[in-house]
Length: 221
Image 1: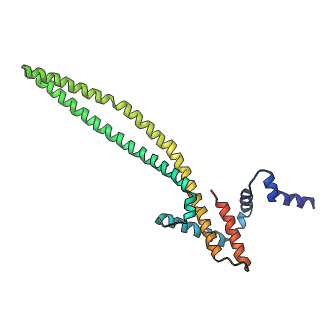
Image 2: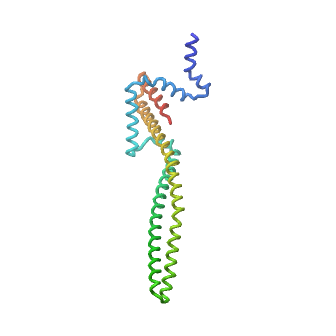
Image 3: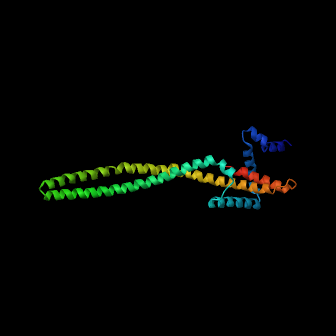
């Protein structure tokens, strides 16, 4: 008898509360213990509601206003993340375009400067001296423009590193969170659907609600 009492003591919610675990953690532990016993019908029902939630999100249909309001703070932070992500992409494109335009302008200035200096060697008048001075100014300006390319390349590399590391890692976490949130909202829809058909005189309806509630706790992000 002591052996059985210790067995039930291990699985009692009170013991879990004393150990510092919440009741929801206990529910998830029980679900993990009963995982292999989950019926095929239960898994199909769960997948149905997850698929339905995915379709609702994909089509942009209206969801439960209270559920959406509960995630308002999270959605605001996600909006900031997407803004940073988009800004990084736009900044990289602008730097690339600026470098291309800078190199093109530098080549044109250098060609113009060499042409003027070449013509100044033929024309010995005052106009020739002016062409020589302008030609030197053009070639110097071309060199100065090319010197900007080094800092631009370093800036591009730093932004690209930030995008590949910080943003990509955060995006992976967000994708996992979105998957968990979809399962959680699907479980809430399932509970809402069952509660509409709830009849206190029928035990099966209460069992369905309890099973759905357990799935909901297990799907909580």
